Length: 292
Ligand SMILES: NC(=O)c1ccc[n+]([C@@H]2O[C@H](COP(=O)([O-])OP(=O)(O)OC[C@H]3O[C@@H](n4cnc5c(N)ncnc54)[C@H](OP(=O)(O)O)[C@@H]3O)[C@@H](O)[C@H]2O)c1
Image (cartoon, rainbow, N blue to C red):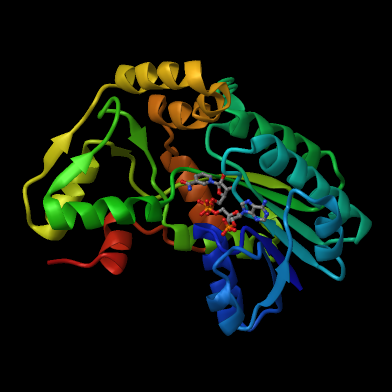
């Protein structure tokens, strides 16, 4: 049985769908407040709990062979990105889990001090590597599904909004490909005890994204591009009223200020290990948002 955390998230939902398409037994860790009806309809075993509670993690890990940790943190990196993953790893050890897949983030090892999520994920990676478990660590770039709402707004208005340097590069990854890789990691021998950077086939500058939208929807882009300094100013203002919110914006600031792309060698390694041809952003958006 697979345990999938974050089963109602963008990635986790796709992992559960693909596992159920292959008639695998899946325990989907969800909160009572989550939208889990679709997962239940697909035949996943619904486990209701909260990853902030160790007792829920202990129960969820019984009789599990594989764990795919794909939950997000909202604003509580300490409890969810860090503590919940440490508890999952400890329970994986106690239950003799065969393979643990951890969804980290591209650039996690660059020492970005402003982001509690990056720091937590790096510490979890280290803990997992020294745990004695079989593991695969996936470090993805930004997910393609994040762009679906932006593409829909562009389709309706022509407006593309993006903060910061438009020359910054990324390797936006098809969330469906990432789900496939996360599942395959449990079975493929050469993925065992490995770390993979995971990105799409193209290195895209931010300014390439509205060009893709223009091609998809056959309309000119109206680009609104405030500088990063504006974000920093607003953040500093927020900090005077709400220091906690200011801190939690550190991850967003890190993502806006830096480049997150994979080299061609990293993509080739990914494609050969997992026998996959990574999908381009344009193809992903065409499938989900379509054309005019
Ligand atoms: N999105 C990206 O571009 C990106 C890039 C690189 C790495 N990642 C990493 O990839 C992973 C998946 O990201 P995503 O975008 O798919 O996340 P997401 O869509 O934000 O989903 C987060 C999931 O975590 C669950 N969750 C949050 N708090 C929880 C709690 N206390 N107890 C149980 N479940 C809880 C949410 O449940 P509810 O439905 O109840 O809210 C949801 O299922 C994350 O680890 C993220 O850091 C994401």
